[in-house]
Image 1 (cartoon, rainbow, N blue to C red):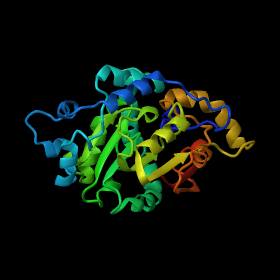
Image 2: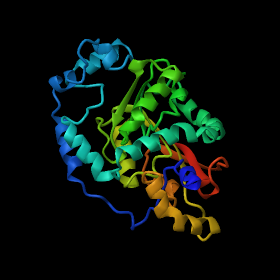
Image 3: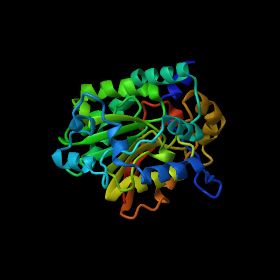
Image 4: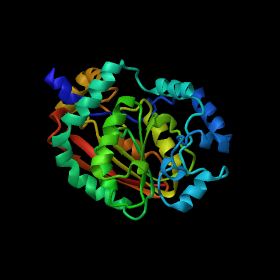
Length: 311
């Protein structure tokens, strides 16, 4: 059981090739159509009664508040017009789990990743330095319990939208934001999936994904969505554990354990060559991919890739 819980520390992968399925999903088209027809009333409906507009829309300055108030150029992410549609879209891509599983997984990530976060910290600091002074609007997909939120604080006016399909992550992520020193109005949790991001085209300066692409159902679609929501020149930051070298002993073991890993680690794959997916995604501004071995993880998920890509 302990080994299973250790392996829950991840979110994993498959192989990019002609074998990668291109999912067809009508809900995405419906969402896009709805998003294109959002009116000012829809935006107002997301402002909590009794609160100031600037707080609920994220305090990134009055200029951004005025942009948010304009029906022509909304700043806030455009949420699905009705909650049931949002739930349907999440269920299309993300394996459905009972609440006790979601809560257990969230609790485990909040307590079981400390040694990993300590070892990976220098890699993350280097990557997040790319955002300093350049990114006010950031989307983090698979925000989980919020271990990365402390890296945003150096950006005074940053607004972070943390997205995760597991709603049980929200309380942990909000607590992490508070502990990191992010103002409450500068962090918002969004329930959603990477394959159907509920934000407008060209709406964020940066997208962050750490230990996420191993768990999404469709890596290619998720990367396309990341490119869609990024502004021209926007940056994508990533750290992912990946498959071991083909034919190696480690890879053979990964192949055997992969089905179990997906069950205990909420859809995480052990055999995904995520670096190849990112290289093939077509980020027009270039892609930098590095490799690393993280020893605080179980050896079965030690290989990592990390880097940046520019739209």
